[in-house]
Amino acid sequence: MLDVIGAGATASSETNWHDVWQRSNEAAELQREVDKIRHDGFNSPPVVITRRSEFAAPWSFQVVELIKRSAQRTGGILHICLRNSCSISAEGEFLHIN
Image 1 (cartoon, one colour):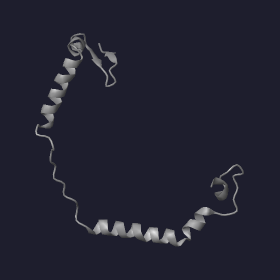
Image 2 (cartoon, rainbow, N blue to C red; image 1 turned 180 degrees about the vertical axis):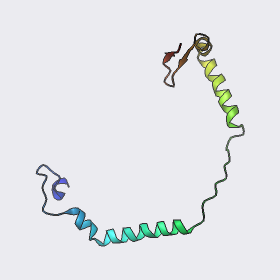
Image 3 (cartoon, helix red, strand yellow; image 1 turned 30 degrees about the vertical axis):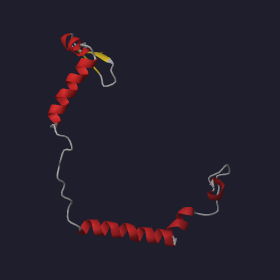
Image 4 (cartoon, rainbow, N blue to C red; image 1 turned 135 degrees about the vertical axis):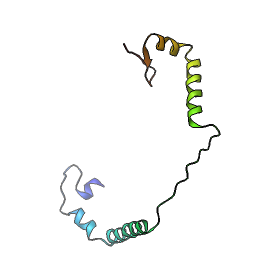
């Protein structure tokens, strides 16, 4: 395949494939299709998004519960880190802050 378009070991071609594509019927049809999609999009009303949650609990409650659960799983490491002024990165590495 690469040898056919001139990108193989010899890296040479007599054909300008960009010009071949630009003059092709397929490129013209594709451009008409893109233009139609853009035209239809500009002429349609804006999409109205209703924000709904699929969860029963609000986001803030979930974050608090996540922090509690994480603290329980680390066996008090979070408490020790807060007391000693250090923190844990997202990857679980200890970062000392003074």
